[in-house]
Length: 201
Image 1 (cartoon, helix red, strand yellow):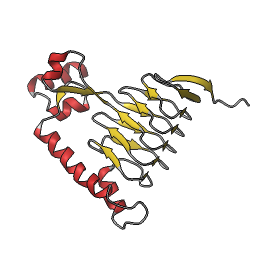
Image 2 (cartoon, helix red, strand yellow):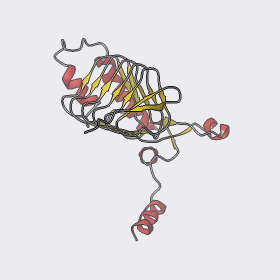
Image 3 (cartoon, helix red, strand yellow):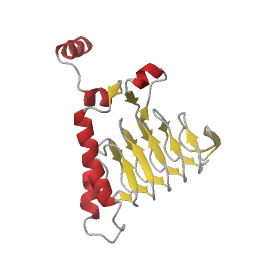
Image 4 (cartoon, helix red, strand yellow):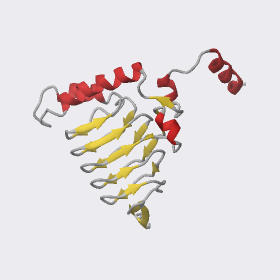
């Protein structure tokens, strides 16, 4: 019944481009509402990226506006880049080092004690394989989930739709295109599990 009701509501009122984006459907990124939201966050990012971490009284205020759904103790070493900010959720004691990029057209969920080395890139955004659809400027997003106590080394890229379990270490320069189970050390392009980090009792 809920499925039928949902279909009826969609037939009654077409989804906005933002609603399509958040539902991981094809959408048009040039939609005026989405453009306004990206411009807003980029103004704040411009301010943040000109600040000295730990030595600017407005740092916390600006960071809270950019990442309203992250733990209040999240630490970001500028420069930092994202699309919307509100799609990023991270637990306590999360740290982003220099030059990290989060393309958050879909939700990016990070657990507590996450450590992200310089130039880590989390990409939820994707484009159709069909060139005609790309030419129509359609795109989509798939969520990224990263568990508690993870450490991603320098230059790691995480692709759309990937889930990384808890207590995972990803070696520098790796490209994570598939899910990584908890308690693993992963490395390579594409990243593969090198060994288990699970401690024997």
